[in-house]
Image (cartoon, rainbow, N blue to C red; front, side):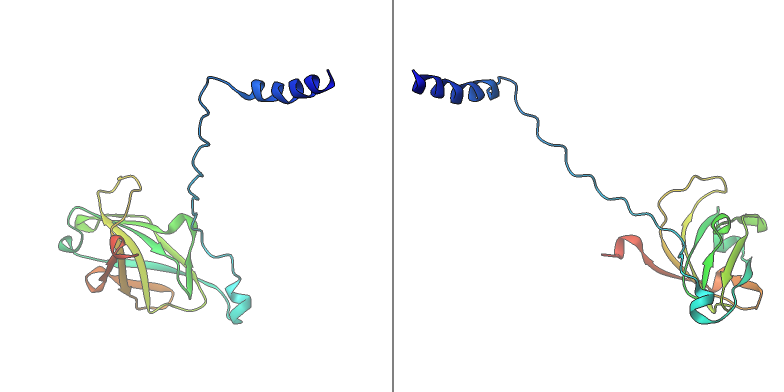
Amino acid sequence: MKRLLIALLFCVPMIAGATDTPQTPPPPAPTPRISIFSTTTDWAALTGLPLRQFIGKFSWTNSDVSRGLVMYYLDAFPCYGEADSVRIWLGPNKQSTGTLRLVCVHAPKTISFTWRNATRDADQAVSTGILNCPVTGEYELDIDISKCTRGPEWKEYK
């Protein structure tokens, strides 16, 4: 009798675990999202140089921008862009929106943007690649779009 009870006790969990409903596989692991933010490093403390604000002034012709050029400043030493002023739209007939404001330890010689051709009010979308631009000036940085060179397109990065 004792053996019968022990055998029944082992069978009950197996019967309770058996079901006709198929087991659903676990959901796939989420793809990590990467957020890109300006650096939080205190460059003034690390370099011993004071941070100063610089304003970007653009020059371009209609042939440089055709229907419009949306650019986002890419942070790079010695500068980082102020969060509300890194998107610039340049359009035909000297139309533009946005102001490039940078905080730097010294005036940069070159700066880089991500870019794409788009109209003024186009929503943020995937950009084309990198645009590298020489810069002149001190506190007012002069950026001539005709002197910028296109870097690799994003699809070329691996």
